[in-house]
Image 1: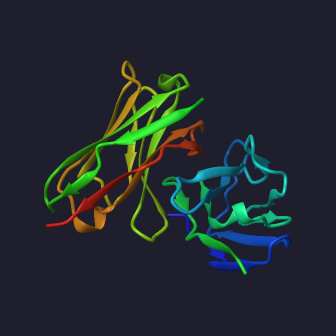
Image 2: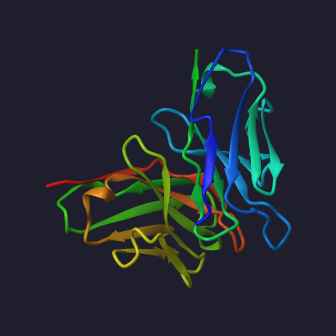
Length: 112
Length: 120
């Protein structure tokens, strides 16, 4: 199975400051159609996961533009340009290119 | 709007069975594959199973293969997960999620989750 390794696992951030989460894959996530199926999910406390970013860098509808995704091949990053209080939660990367789909361990974002 | 509502969770003894349901609305259910993903208390997300839009293909995580069965009734817009021979390590919140991928896994919308507790 593809292993996704996130870092850091815990990320204390000051309100208004940027935050960055890394997700590294044990193999390339480029699919035969040329797309890379690497998604980012946000899970606020007590809530279900919500997809923020799909195919590396595409924001889902309603996702604030302070969230951005980048990367290629095996290295990917989720960035929050200015952290707000509502961004507290756990963030997961997920790959759908290879079977079975797998998730990173999660990164807990909290306010300092 | 797209909505997925899970139900059927509860407390069950080891070795017993339970069936989860996921009622879909706000989209054409029969056009989409569907996933089950679980989350043990305080832990991360673990993919469990997927079923194709027409039920023709089903795939399972090794941890549940042979014990869990995913199915769907497109006439009722409902997804199911039959869980047999339950173990303590199956204790988790189970989420259903719609898949928008073609040949890949791409879950977009998730349900609210239903808690399964396996304990004697």
